[in-house]
Picture 1 (cartoon, rainbow, N blue to C red):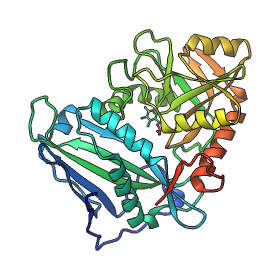
Picture 2 (spheres, protein in one colour; picture 1 turned 90 degrees about the vertical axis):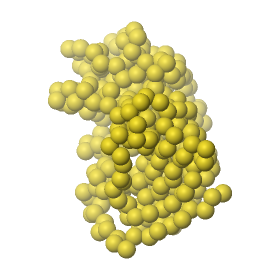
Picture 3 (tube, rainbow, N blue to C red; picture 1 turned 135 degrees about the vertical axis):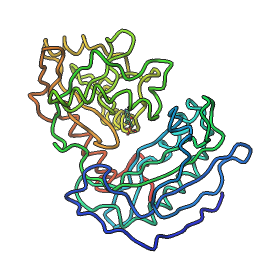
Length: 354
Ligand SMILES: *Cc1c(COP(=O)(O)O)cnc(C)c1O
């Protein structure tokens, strides 16, 4: 393995108070960098003081969005140490995104080690408090100073970290979701299954309009028939109908969440019937009408579980589980957060100590 050169900061920042963290507002003292040059591969891995980058204004990532990212967290453990949750899955997925975006693949094991080293150096930044964690953002950008549309030959892999509190101001309370029938996020054959900047710029307009109407997120439908449910905001989505827990199958336009995968495994281990399949909006509305729509929730690293209390379909408002947190949402939140924080036994072997 390559050696990671470490340059420590001479000016440690003051840490923000835990109560006012919010999400993604503060950054730790250090960051990880590694360059890729055509012909040389990924070279010069290094941890340096956090600070601005210097880029050529023609850097390709700024023009054509050749960029990929990941989102994961480090958790404070009862013994005062730190742990990561399934970091190998994040690096695997980063390579899935890399492949789609013509970005050279990274060495997954090496990058997990690099992240552990960075977390260890900045471990004082892992907040202590309920619903808090150190959010980790690995990303890769294309740097070639060049305005032609081609895969880049010089790229930079960066990892930055941010102490975070609860993702939503509302906490784990059920949210109001607007079913988006005009805009779409992704289509099969596109990049929906990757974490790349363009997917999120494509979603801003719908999100902005939904927020202005007083809703927290949008529910995305498929881009072709506008009929099948895909995701909720930047989370995967689950519905419980008549005892069956259903989540849309991954067919190219949906991001394969690690929380989604973990929820499926937890529920199956506890004897729930979980199905990955196409689920139409019509089926959900019919279930609401005949009283079999029992629960709905989003899943993702940031919020873990986000119960859906209300769905707005055109001029119809569907209340789910009387707007309260359901049994499955509760169970998943307690189990996964417990495993992450070390208060629930990790029978799956998901946690890696730093
Ligand atoms: C990151 C993300 C998710 C959730 O993935 P996790 O690995 O569970 O955090 C779901 N949908 C989209 C669009 C995402 O970007």
